[in-house]
Amino acid sequence: RASREIESMMSIYICQSPFSDHTNTTQQGSSHRISLPNYRNNSTMATAAPNTSSASTSVDYHDVLGRRQLVCKIVIPLLLFSFNFCAPTEAFSSPRPICYGAKNHGWVPSASTPSKLFASTMTTAASLVGSRMSINESYPGLKRVHSNPDVYVIEQFLDDASCDDLINKAREKGTSRSPVAYAGWTEDIKDLLGLAASGPVSWGAILGAWYEAQGDAEASVPSLVLHALRNYAALFAVALVGIVVFTKFRADSLQNLRTSSSTTLDDLSQVGAKNFVLRASDLYGPTPSSSEIPAASFFEAPTVIQYEKDQVLAPHYDANRSADVEDANRGGQTLSTLLVYLNDVANGGTTRFGKLPAADYERQVKGERNLNIIPKKGDALLFFPADKNGRFDERTEHEGCPAVDEKWIARIWRHTDRVPPPFGLSDSSMEDHL
Image 1: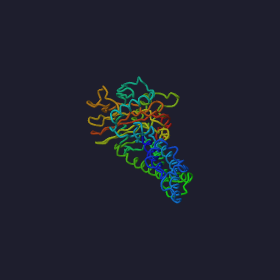
Image 2: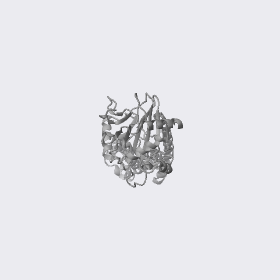
Image 3: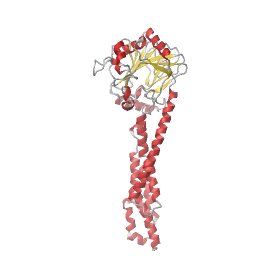
Image 4: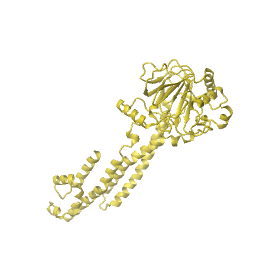
């Protein structure tokens, strides 16, 4: 509709030639626009037009009409092309939230999607995501609390001694503010640049070139094109700088979304870390490609996270839409998340999945409409942020609700490929202790 309105307005402007009556030319402009450039050589109309005997006046009319012909031939087609080309891309027209991330894993604003759009999003997501990676379905204590996407609770996954050792070793090593990075920044910059280049930058370059040609009686098609290209380059450079600054500002503002403290424990000589990795290896089993490669090779080193009163982890994703680029040095996409609760938490600190319904499970928060699990010492929570091929699953958005009592958890991320140190475990450590 916008394209048709602009085409109509610009055509009316061009058709209002001094050689004919305003009403008649406007009517011709709405039905015979393609023949308008021939008016300049139309002797019949020129003879019939009033006050056209002056040579100087005729030259002025021709100059004006010549410039308007340039608009008709060049500016209007380019404007209409840019309007059609800059139709919203899939990334912006779909209900895809912009990704942010903790250690290159996505954050999103919560509770901002209308219910109808939310339902449409869930249906689309479920149809696009494939099956999850395989696990040991007969693992002791494994209970499915949600299907498609699968979410499991594993009761008594770690014994009390291992839980206590993980907390003590984390205290000894010392924790620091949990790191936050911007996941999906490469995709966002690409999308924003594409939108700017095909939209505002193109419009500004074309309109700027047209404006510059207004006072030039010798304006030609090549000069108009050169003006447009020069303007496009300048405006594109400005847009690039603005997008980079915006992206940096967004990345810097993410830290407030995660207020916990954490540390990694990659020393498998420690009882807690060793038992955690061993049990995770039994749960995930050998890799399909080669049983000779230790399952732990695909793990990030265990991370122990502490939540004190009022500390939170905002709604986020553990997978990354741009994992092939941004997470290439840490094993690629995150296929599975394994959380272990290291202490009992009487109040607060639940793990909530804002896009999944409540479960019929004893540790589900009562009266909560979404899946929301109460921590219990030694129990584990298992879910799959992406399918086995690495396709992002937006249904697994989750959060660490505000802590009232102190909460400790340990986490392992299982990736698509082997995770090299310092993110993963060293070969020597695995050979000596696993």
